[in-house]
Figure 1 (tube, rainbow, N blue to C red):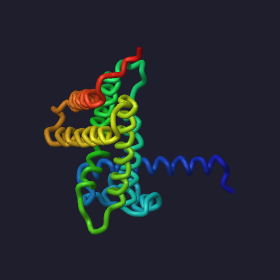
Figure 2 (cartoon, rainbow, N blue to C red):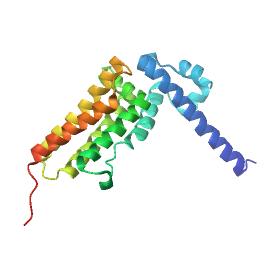
Figure 3 (tube, helix red, strand yellow):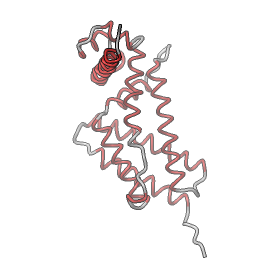
Figure 4 (cartoon, rainbow, N blue to C red):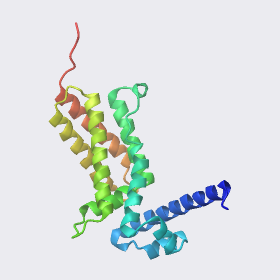
Length: 212
């Protein structure tokens, strides 16, 4: 008879194995891309047999999608506007941008792999690409909500334009660092990007309404 202790141990071992598999996949996919990632390579990297990988994931596509989902959940916690105690709206958005940049410097594989998949066109779309586009939409909505909250006078189309600029600009700065290497100060670039978006939003919103 299997007791509670044995069941908990099996569950813990299963969670640990899953994390080892995902960690190994992140490294391999970050270096080789989608096509260069294989179950055999992940198995060799994590030290678990292919059967263990297939126990957790249906196939490579399912595995890549899980990597993107896990990384995104961690990254999304940085897309939070600090509270009023952090200072002015400009100071708050600049701090948030710096936090996002630091998270990408620490773990760039999520966005690196996601952009690779987003730019590829295949007869059958990998689930990983679909997942990345979905989580990208979540990021877009989160940033749009922040802009709208800080500048309630902005028209809806202006919020959408600024949000698109914010997301696309962040992508471009990330790619620039990928091309140029660690000498690029991504944190400073993200801070400047945030200030430009803030200033543009302030101009579009117009002067604040003064109460008598």
